[in-house]
Length: 112
Length: 112
Image 1 (cartoon, rainbow over the protein chains, first blue to last red):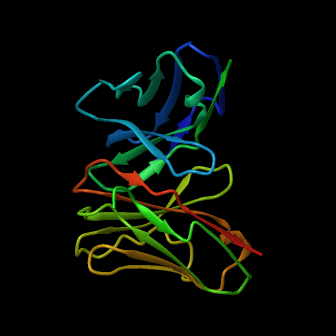
Image 2 (spheres, each protein chain N blue to C red):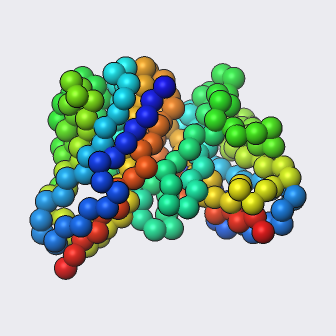
């Protein structure tokens, strides 16, 4: 099976600072990883994904890092803005399957 | 449509009644997922459809839950004899051949 955890339930950052949200997974056969952002009252919004043949991928203001050795995934948000305030979930797909297993989420709070 | 569409967006029902939740996936997407999210929790897998293959029903919590997908497009999730513990957000997602998985805004179900 697969269990996915997040290191911190809540992360508070100052506007303009960089944010790092971490995620650990348990199954070494996991091969596809996705970060979602969920604002209050809305569905999860895709942010960025990475496959197991990569260790880093960059998007607009976001970077995902994958360390398969320690089964760890992180999301870095540069120059965090108030609009980044939300719950962030990592999700994992294992063994070429199609089922997403979600972590419990990290609440990101951006302080002005 | 441009995104995954779900209806109703909100539903309040009496305990013991049946409810139907509808999902219109992104046009052309072959895979369709249903997830459930209880208040403040992560997402729990319910069921997965891929093309004409038999659905993966391994996440359905009881035989009161069922889902179908007609014509490879629209899906309906049915909950019979609803219980208060069924109160949650029911999220639908779709993807194309193992690509990015996009979510709808969810159907918020309250059983009173």
